[in-house]
Image (cartoon, rainbow, N blue to C red; front, side, top):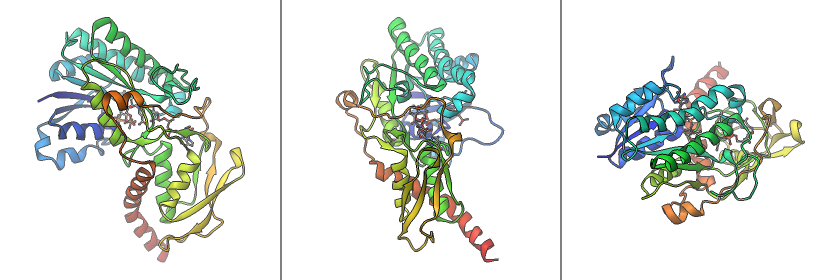
Length: 365
Ligand code: NDP
Ligand code: GDR
């Protein structure tokens, strides 16, 4: 039985990866941070539903800023594979917490690599580094592939640039099986609520159910290559199953604007919207509602731009070329964007439905 250690196990990707590795028969260890309220919602089902998994899934308190803690856990666990998914992963927030972001996302990766060296695990332990399309930032070539030059545009992107190169350096200097997955944006019903896709699908559900009036949002022109997190954790695993370590772009090859994503999400509940105005005064109004369950009058504003969500330096457009992953890893995304949006809206409707019933009762009173 192989043993894996996942940092960031309580996050979107950590949850899907833990599930995938348990299905593959791994013993899975995860590092979670101590928090004042429970933060294991995404992985709780792995304890409750899979009896067998109880003995194959263990959590350890830890933090990427604490090297003694990381060394101790790795010494105990003796992992065959480490997946370094832990990070302060919000690009906009990284402008507010640049030093913390550098420490966790940049030096945190170094701490793991050093732990492998200190413990003499160079020949045993493979490590996957969660690199990102944010490395391309101000893009130098379209679509972006493994050889495209990097130009990060945020403290997050710069911290991840350090992590990318220290991973390459430890591979070359010490012969560690250390690989980067340069993953483009990937989403799911488990996506954090403050990333734009989930913010939109939650708002669509809440607006349709009469729980929210309007969605306030930032740059509608930004374009991203959005895939599904389930497809992307499969790529992570495949990257570590190769004979030699290497770096791979993982992407769908299709870019969509935030504006079009929002249109598609509203279409899922039978609401057609149209955008009017420009820049900070742009808004979206309802032009038709074909679902009788949702009473939205035409002409009503459902999206407004709020410049507070603009970033000091923006990444305008990302689109990936995953030819190398297709050829070497035999990896292809299974989900279409439409399927993913549909799943996300459906799950958010389910989450809000009980609240909508209570809300309706209160209105009736
Ligand atoms: P999430 O934000 O959902 O999860 C991040 C995880 O990291 C959480 O478990 C979080 O814990 C943990 N974490 C944060 N800070 C620390 C710390 N100091 N020490 C230990 N753990 C910490 O991110 P995703 O699952 O979406 O992404 C996974 C990784 O992939 C991240 O490194 C991200 O930067 C990278 N990435 C993500 C992409 C995407 O589109 N999703 C694309 C490319 C790269 P807690 O739950 O307590 O907050
Ligand atoms: P990103 O994802 O920055 O690409 O980083 P995010 O969903 O935050 O933003 C995507 C684009 O949408 C624009 N945008 C908004 N973004 C947020 N969060 N909130 C808004 O209201 C809003 N309005 C418009 C943004 O300006 C941006 O252009 C994600 C993270 O998962 C990173 O960890 C990961 O490395 C990259 O994807 C690939």
